[in-house]
Length: 86
Image 1 (cartoon, rainbow, N blue to C red):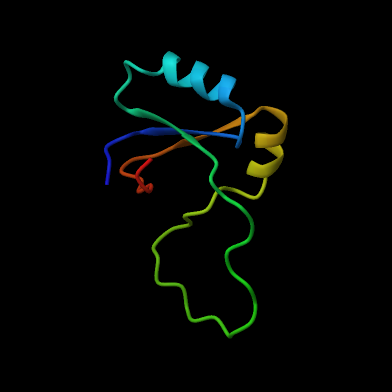
Image 2 (tube, rainbow, N blue to C red):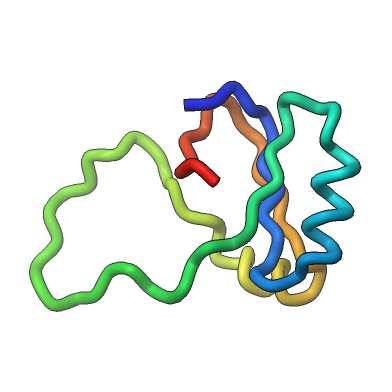
């Protein structure tokens, strides 16, 4: 867990934007800048699904792909979000 209050997800491969945002928020301990590491849909409809046990949605909103493609980054605001280590 981390105490970050804002995550900025940068589209894969945009090193210039990633570096610029990382530098801009270097002194802000509540902001984390990460690359979008998704490679495709992780779930398939092969087996029947079990009821979801998680309390909230953990994936990016449906329009995140469009925003990443046009703007290059997506901002997630919240408290105590869990992300994998960099």
